[in-house]
Amino acid sequence: MLAASFSHSIGGVWLQLKPVRVGRVPASIPAPDRYVTVARANQPVLRVDVYSYGPDCFAFEEVIAWRDLILIGFGSHVHAISAIDHSVVTIELESYFAHLYPNRDFVLLASGERLFRLQPDRSVGWKSAPLGLDGVVVREVGHDAIRGEGEWDPPGGWKPFTVSVVDGSLTR
Image (cartoon, rainbow, N blue to C red):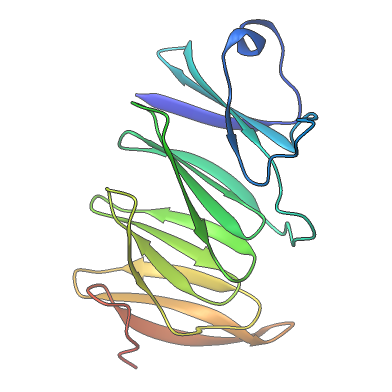
């Protein structure tokens, strides 16, 4: 089983691994904004150097291992990295990253405004219509519907939503 974590600095064996670099990597390659370290059975397998895309909102950050993928939510992007071949797919969220909601068949990517359904092959199955202006929270993922709340009138102006699991369309 893979275990992934964020850190501001690394040392030891992690410095010996060739990094996968994600984000807007500067030509001079300074220290990244964050490091992600990935281990299997406490053995280092992957190091990811995460760079920001410039002026961005960093309300939340999260990293998870899902299947054979490492998913990193940072700034206004989610980076999906294969733990097998280290290839990278980056998804632009059009708003700040909020949270990852893993499921057996897919992962929901929540931004400040929308939900995205990430498939196991790292393609985006769908992108919802705006569900909020300053936050989207998933409360329940059912067989047919996803229920949650979007903040439309900050602070505290949360309104419920229900979207289709199949295509992300609003059902109520």
